Amino acid sequence: MRLKGKVALITGAARGQGEAEARMFSREGAKVVVSDVLEDAGRKVAKEISDGGGEALFVKLDVTSEAGWKQAVEATVKRFSKLDILVNNAAILYTEPVLETTVEIWDRTMDINSTGVFLGTREVIPHMRRNGGGSIVNIASLSANVAGPYAAAYHASKGAVRIFTKAAAIQYAKENIRVNSVHPGPVDTKMIRDAYAESWLKRIDTQSPMGRMASSDEIAYCVLFLASDEASYVTGVELIVDGGWGAQ
Ligand SMILES: NC(=O)c1ccc[n+]([C@@H]2O[C@H](COP(=O)([O-])OP(=O)(O)OC[C@H]3O[C@@H](n4cnc5c(N)ncnc54)[C@H](O)[C@@H]3O)[C@@H](O)[C@H]2O)c1
Image (cartoon, rainbow, N blue to C red):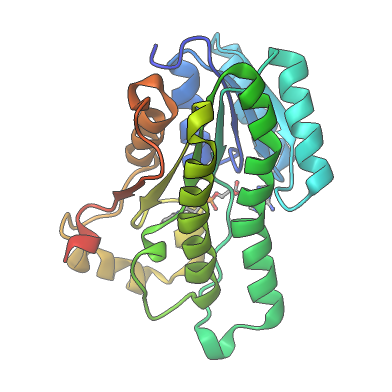
């Protein structure tokens, strides 16, 4: 019960890593707000958590919407009285290199992956402040640290998350609000399987020191640590979880 009594809001929690985090956080004693643009899948995750004896609420949230953030945080506090943890997990991936990146691809990627993280952070800090502290975990990517042949806008958006995290961390550290980022290498979810052909994904087996992608749970355990009071002196860090990929 590493999150006993905590209230956590997770974006993009209808599937993939966000779903794994919602289920794991609930198993560890948290009350969980599952949020996503995918309504049916998100409701299903929240219902299964509740049916299994946990406490969960689904809130439809497009992370690019300022009004949406206000409503989601209000709904969280109304139902569970407070908000201790925010996981900014929602994101999209376009794989186009620079010359193929349209302004629409660039703007959409920055809106969801970077602006969404800023809006969420700005919305929850006053509640955490009132509560005496809190933990924000931003899901960046190894793509924030090392470049690759694809995905120009994605790299830029995750680089923004990396340094925004550190700025927010030092600005609110005195108020016991911790802000950290998690940087996964390849994770076996719909995002990467939709983006890349099977032949390209097979290269991961030879290029990764561990010879495989991560599971969503392997990332979620790291998010859990940063979200919990076990990480009470950890702020402004980037936790790379990549099976050794970036160490090469
Ligand atoms: N899968 C990987 O290889 C990998 C690697 C590094 C980092 N990441 C990061 O991990 C996080 C989780 O990704 P995943 O692998 O679970 O992918 P995923 O595509 O399975 O999940 C992403 C979720 O975000 C939601 N989402 C998309 N746009 C949204 C919006 N505007 N508002 C709210 N929700 C929205 C989607 O509906 C989906 O449920 C993302 O931040 C991603 O960039 C993934």
